[in-house]
Image 1 (tube, rainbow, N blue to C red):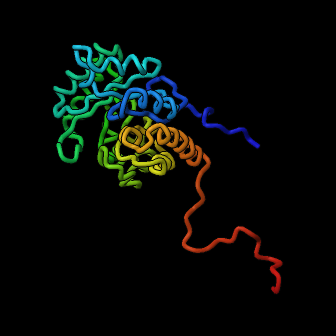
Image 2: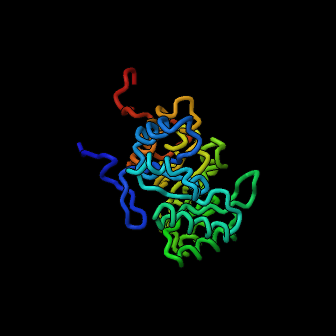
Image 3: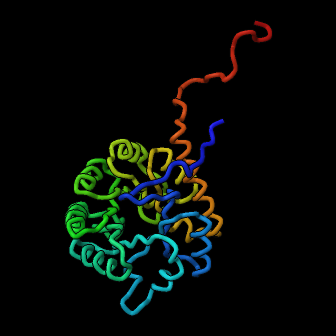
Length: 261
């Protein structure tokens, strides 16, 4: 039997290798202990954090210290223009000493859909300034291709609305993006429970980023562990290849030699 483990299959983004394909957010936990225990239980190596919570007065740095052994991916959550996102990215680079940035430019306050025009503008400018840019975007293959063409290190299409827990709303689009993308695809937003993460990975996603599904679960630590296993299971199933869907029954046992035939 082949010894197949998920650890034979690292995720590589911008030249950096990760054993875990689960990225996890740090907002909304009941307290710092639950946050730390959840991140540990998830086995994630990458954690995200809104740069708004890391103020010049030092607020938010307790979380940075708490998770000092993990790779930080600051994000520009709350920005509505390319100009604001670029400024926030520069502050993140100064505060956290990283060129990596999860780029969010929101165009609608109710749905939190990205503003595509501003997103493309900010991506191009940040790359020219030496950032490793990972943009959060619509589940649109054309937009994902344009972001990759500009030099994005990965694309992060939405599973569904941020914080909605609705799972992967448009699996056909996510699957098409994964097949075409020249850079890793990280499904971001909308994951509500472990089965949603499995589906995203079975569609071919390189990784999953989630926050609320764990932070707001009744038992965040247990849900974090479930998400870690779900991402591994989904990745292994994708690599193994599912059987074709059929509209009729297909017996698994031979039909010759049946009793009474």
